[in-house]
Each structure stands twice: as C-alpha cells, then as structure tokens.
Image 1 (spheres, rainbow, N blue to C red):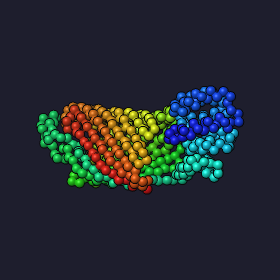
Image 2: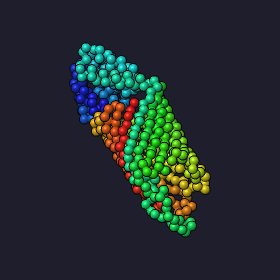
Image 3: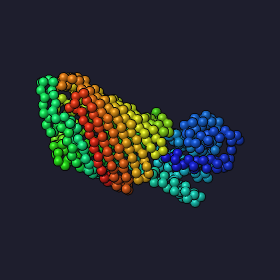
Image 4: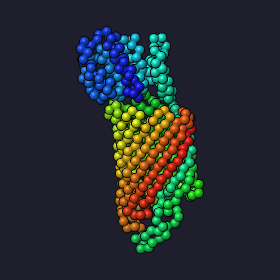
Length: 441
C-alpha cells in the first residue's frame, strides 16, 4: 500500500529535500541512482544501493529521507524510523517527513507514537489539507490498533443457500464386485451419488490480545449447521476451534497453537480431530512472504476404531504480492497412520500441490480462486478388495465477494472435486454452488 499511495509524494518531497537541507550533498549524482530506482519502483535494488551509501551519507537529510522511503518499501520499518527521526530532528519544519515517521512507527506497532505525531500534524496550521487527510486516516488506524491491544473480539453470522451435486461423495456405480468373497453386491442408495439443495448457518468469532509490539495471543471459533432439503440423514454440524500464540523475532515470526475440530453427522458425534500447530513466516522481500508449518494431531472416530489415526503434516507456501493481487503457491505432505496395525489399509500418505489467489478489484469487490492436485497412497491392501488403494484428486474453487458495508457482505462460491481411484467405489465427481450473506459485528 505504501508503494502505491505514497510514491508520488516521495518523489516530490525529494525535490524539496535537496533545497531545505542545511548541509546539501555536493555531488548530487551520488543519489541519482537511488532516486531513479525508487521512481521506477525497483525497491529491492534501491535497498541495496541505499545500504552501500549509508556509511557515507547517513545524517544528511536528503539521503536520510530516501533511505527511509526505501526502508519502508522493503518492510524494514525499524530502519525507516531511525532515518525519519534524523530528518525531523534536523528539519522539524519538514511536515511530510513527520508523517512518514508516524507511518513507520505504525508499521512497527508503535501505535501511540504514530497517533501522537498524527495529532501534532492535524494541530499544525501549516499542514496542507492533503497531508491532514492522510494524517487523520493514520490517526484513526492507530487508535483502532491501540483499542485492540486490550481484549478484542470480532464476530460474523453467515447464512448460505446452495446446491450439492454429490452430498455423500458417493459413486455412480450400481453394484460392486468384492474379490474377498467373489460376489457382486447391489449398492444401497446411501452409498450412491445423491444430490440435494441445502442451507447452512454458521457463527464465527475471532479475537485476541496484544501483549507487546512483538507478541500476541489469538483465538478463533466457528460452528456450522448444515441441513439438506430432502436427504436429512446426511445433515451435519461441525466446529473449528483454535488458540495460537505468536512472537516476532528478527529472523521472522513464530507461532504455536492448538486446534480442535469435532464433526457431528445426523445429530451424532462422528469424529474429533485435535492438532498441535507450529508455524513460521518470514518476509523475504517487499513482495515475497514465505510460510511453513509442522502439525501433530490425532483423529478419534466415535463410530469405528478403524478410522482412528495419528497425524503428522508439514507445509510450505510462498506468497507473492503484486499491487492488489496476492498469489500463493503451496506444497504439503501429511502422514495419517492408523493407531492399530490391523487397520493399516486406512493409513495414508497425502501430497498436495496448490495455487490460489486473492484479487482486490476495488473497495467493494474481492475475487479469489484456488486449484489443487492431491495424491493419496494407502499403506496396505484393502481387506475387501485385496488391493492397495491409490487415489488422486483435482480440487478447484472460485469466490466473488461484494462488500455492501462494514456490516454486510455477500459471496458467490463455486467448488468442484474430481476424484479418481483404482478402486471404482471410491471414485466420484462433486460440485457445489452457494450464495452466502454475512453479517459482521
């Protein structure tokens, strides 16, 4: 955001900086390369240039200003704070530098300083109308962040109406041959592909508490009731509960947490999954963010002990930000092992490759999409089919969201699955389309 909204300001202020500096740099060509790189949005190379020049020119307001601009553009807000502090100490009348100092303080979560400087700008009669508008926006953001440093909660209620082409992920086969018995069996309707309209109601709450500029605790909870129009035996209710502690270090941000995911089918508890999560994220450049995680969990199935598993998973993702578009490339691997050896035919190793994006079209419209390929390798021969199961699946989704106001938003969601298995009973296709209304409070 800072690159998009403040770059014209940076360039105009640089022209001012060369005239107001008490000790101007004699060789103006020294900064030409840095200025050119900033004007061309080449922020990675601009940072390298600024780092090479800093030993010689730190303390010169003209250079400090450009150094601070480059630091902000490369998510090095701590360096930007020091740079703009030097500028404003030498040139207290330089109001634009004061605003950027407030912006840098906001970036490092020093919200009180950002608020104080913004307020000073608003009270200064020499502040231009345009700068007052920016300072007022920053003041509101800083105040909101300060308010959230005490315990805060945001909530959402969502109502969805949709159509599911295969509500039970069933097969299109009418009968199935069982090699272990040598017989062919007619499949029940519950095992075959069924479609139906549905409605779902969900409640979601999230919040947390910020302990310091580098640490906070967050929580989230979501519960959903999913009801079908005709096939009530497939009605379900599920919840996702999560608690996480985050701490930022110089090398990146680390988080540890706990997740609980129960599932009810037809009003009976079907399964509970408990997971210990650990995650790490690091901003590599202004545009690239890398995240990785390790999860340890256990699944307890209340209907059948054969489906109880111990779970280990790892994931790696790269996120690329380009103006109002975010691209994410993911790779994950999980090992779900039955807790009893006799049920190893349900143990599976899952590899998933995915791509997703989020596109902020404008203030009202947001689009997103995802495509993924998944392979499942089961670890023992199936007792009925006398063959080791091997599945692969394509998954895709698309969503379009309209934000009517801060309180109300609406989504059109489309999901599709295409699963292929060497055992035909487990092959299926499924699509889902729904309209959702969200109320935020």
